[in-house]
Image 1 (cartoon, helix red, strand yellow):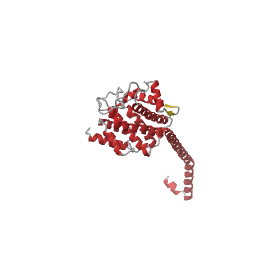
Image 2 (cartoon, rainbow, N blue to C red):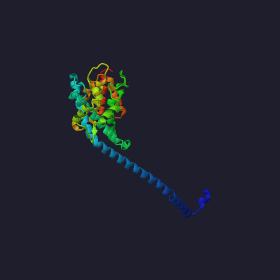
Image 3 (cartoon, one colour):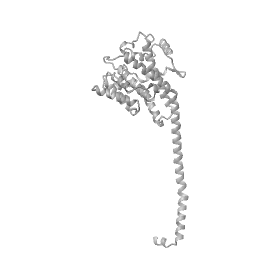
Image 4 (tube, rainbow, N blue to C red):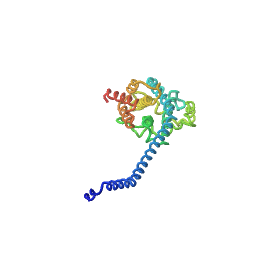
Length: 302
């Protein structure tokens, strides 16, 4: 066969090869082009989908990010004030919630406002495919989860004699979020005056928050809520240092000062684990928090 092929005149061989190539091109090329075009079109649709979803998520986050930063800053400032003055006994209920002093009522209000803002942002993410979110937006959503989890997760006390089935020193998530959700009405958060009016109308509606805060302070026997407030403050510092306005940024020393106030350093270790679990450990602000918390736990020998 090879001898017969080689014996053919060169023009004939060239003509046969050209015909074969033309046949292959005529048959195979359209299939290849179709496959390429199909993959290109699918890829184009994927890129357009991702872009549209990322844009939609960013727009939805922007609706409430300012609210989150304002409520987070207000609570952070109150927590910092509390650390300096907790020995004054300002967190004392006076009979009913409505009859309690301004300090306690406004403290409860600021907690619920922050949780309400986090909830508004979380719900916006339900309407878009957050799986394809831009990295910065995904981290922002994870920060919202941490800002709620630091109030509600009983494992913040892992290693301590705490009964997670009770909510003495933490909140059940559904109870906390249900209370917070009531503060957002008609496209806005209730004012403090409106909140106080609701207390007067229904003293039990927000009682869980008041009971949690009532009498909180350092060195409580068999209580760990003070350390939860420390953890909340650290998370707020980290959140605002990463996502907040320039005027909300604080130095690393502030993280260290708050961390050193923790009565049980194992709480700091558990907070670090929660932060890493949500993938926030490489983010500015949260890195500062982790460094301060780890250094404090190490130097205390726990």
